Image: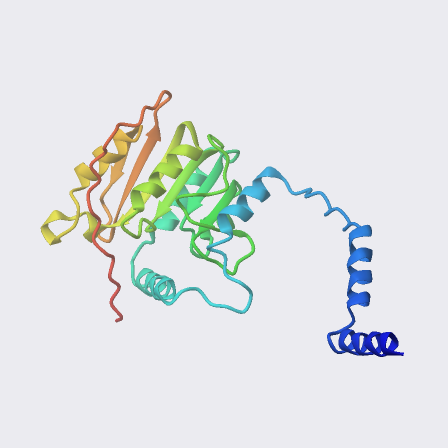
Length: 252
């Protein structure tokens, strides 16, 4: 009788521990039934790169952009409303007067005004956005293919100390002879008020592989540069980039 009692006690212990026999059976079953293979990703190469580039920057639904970016966009919109002429409208007019088949990359697009007002194919790019038509990503690492666009635009969007990396990315995605348009607040390019020297700014971009075609300084609020990528561009080593001071917007 003693062996039976030991067996009964052991069985009780197993049941209190959750049933060894049952767990072994379940484990065996799970090993015999392999997991189904995940479906093949049918996304295009552009979409895959867009996902990768936007993983860290995209805003989940229901969340707002970072407070710093919110303040910048709010200040930008308020400041622009008081300007007699907005640089984005000058750029839109320029695009309309040129080839409508050109592909455009609008870096730091804001409310994507360029895409909404021209017939060109426009990739609207910004750090964050709740607009599904905007590619939300680090502007230094976009999902665009090399040499895939004809025009790259920076309309008051060279923010941050890493702005040279944005221009380097524009150089990567631009085709040879492609256009680089940069509109910048005049005070940021005024050495008399602590801004960068506009000639040194132009020279740095030239060393990136561009030629300055023209510079529009007739507006009191901003300067507009028109660069063109050289057919056989060669990026210089150790480019000395001038420092662009922060753009401060004052409430009126």
